[in-house]
Amino acid sequence: MTVDSRKHAQNIETDSFDRELFGELEATSEELRNLIERGSHLLPNFRSLILDLFASFYKYNVITLPEDEVKRSVLMGRKLIEKAISSEDYKELREETILNDFNSAIATLTLGGEIIKWVKSEEGLSEKSLIKEWELEKAEENLDELKDEVETWEEIEKKKSSNKSLKEGKKKTQFELRSQEGELKDLQKEQKERLERMDLKLQNLVRSSSRQTSERVDEVEKELMEWGASMGMPEEKPIGEKLDLAEKLFKNEKLRKLALLVGSLKEEMFSSRRKIWSKRGSEVYDISLGNDIGRIIPAELSFLRHKALRKDFLKRLIEGRLLQYYLKEEKGRGPLVVCVDGSSSMEGPKEMWAKAVCLSLLEIARRQRRKFCVIVFSSKGTPLKVFGSGVKDNWRMKDEDIIELAGYFPGGGTDFEDPLDKALEFLKESRFKRGDIVFITDGECDVRDEWLNAFLDKKNKLKFKVFSVLIDLTGRETVESLKKFSDKVTAISNLTSKDARGIFLSLD
Figure 1 (cartoon, helix red, strand yellow):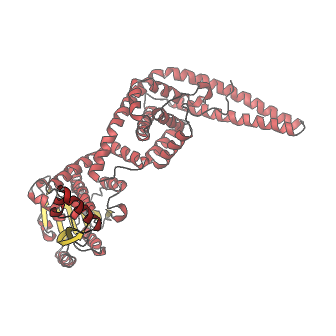
Figure 2: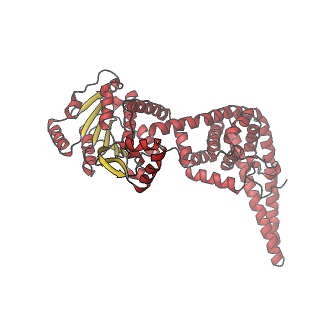
Figure 3: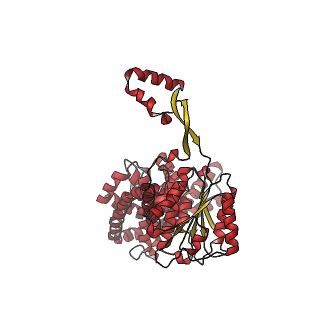
C-alpha cells in the first residue's frame, strides 16, 4: 500500500478557527510551548497529538478522520484518543471543556503531561519502540519525497523528448520508491503488533490520566480565584497568561500556601478597621454647591422623600446647586518600601510569614495609589533583589514578579544597613513625602552607631516612619536592634493583637 503524501498528521478533524485558536494559545502560553517541545523530543508529530487532544476537548462535534487518511506515524496517538473518547471520565470532563478554550487548554496540558510521564516510565514505550516510531516517521517522509521526485521526472518527460538519461533517472527513483514502500510496509506491520501488545497499557494510561485531568479542571478555577483575591490581581487576563499562572500554581505548592496565608492576613488586616478606602486622603473642609451625589449633605437627600420637593432636588442637581461637602484633598504619600529578610535563619515557615506580610501590605499601597517596593536582603555585599509596582502597572505587582518574589531566597548572613540605605534612595526619589518603611526580619543582626545616627538624621528630614515586624517563630528572636531605628515594632506571634493591627492602621 502506497502512502498518500497528502495524508494528515492529525486524527481529529479541525477547521481554520480551531487551528488559529490553538496557535494563539501556543504563542501566548509558555507552558504549552514547553510541553510541545518536551514531547517532540520523545514522539514524532507530538504537536499534532496535542492539537488533537485540544480539539477533542473543545469542539462541539468531535469527528475522527478515517484511519486510511492519516499518517501511520500518528496511529499511537489515535489509539490514545480513541480510548479517551470512549471513557466515562472523558464524557463527564467534556461538560466542563466543550467550547471553553481555557478549560480545554488546562485539560490538554494535564493529559499531555501525563502522556510524557508515561512514555518515560517503565510502563511506557521501550527505547526500541520509540526508535521504531521515529523510523516509521522518517520512512513516510522519504516515501513522500520519492513520490514527488517521480512526479517531477514524469513532468520532465512530458515537456522534453525522452532520452536515455531521463529514463535511467526515472527508473532509479521508481526502484527506490518501491524499496521504500517495502520498508514502510514492514514498519507498519511491526507497529500494528506493537500497538496490540500495548493495548492494555494504553487503556490504563487513559483511565488514570483522565481522572487526574478531570480533578485538575475542577480545581483550577478555585486556585485562580484564591490567588486573585489574595494578590489583588484583576480577574480578566489573556488566556495564555491565565493558563501559565494556573500551571505555576499547580506545580508550586509554596505559591498555593502563600496565597492562602496572604488571604488570611489581609482578612485580619481589614477586619481591624472597615471603612471606605477610596475616601482615604480627604477630609471635610467646608460646605459648597455642586452635583456630586457622593458628597451631598443628608439634609438635601431628605428632599427625595417628598414628592413636591423631589422635582426641586432634581432641578438643582442638574444645575449643580445642591449643598455638598467640600473635601480638602490630602497631598500624595511617598512610597511604601518593604524590606524582607532572606538570610539562612529565615528559611522555612519564617520566609513564608515574611512574604505573606509583605504581599498583604501590597493591598494597602494599591488602595492608597502609592508606589510599592520590595527589597529582599541577606549578607553584607550580597546584591539586593528589588521588586515593585507603580502607576504604569495600575499600582499592582505583575504575576511573574510575585511568583519570582515568592521563590527568591538568597540565604547567607544578615545585614540591615544595605537594605535600609536602598529604601532611603526610593524615598528620596519620590516627589511625595510621608513614605513608610516596613522591615520584616527575625531580628538577628545589629547596626553600627555611626550608620544609625546618619539614618535617624535622614529619617527626620524626609519625615518617614519605620515599622518593623519580627518573625518570632522560635522564641529566640530579639527586638533590640530593631528598636534602634523603628517607630514601632511588633511580632508575628501577636498578629491578632492591637499592637500588630496598629502597624496596618498606621500605614492606612
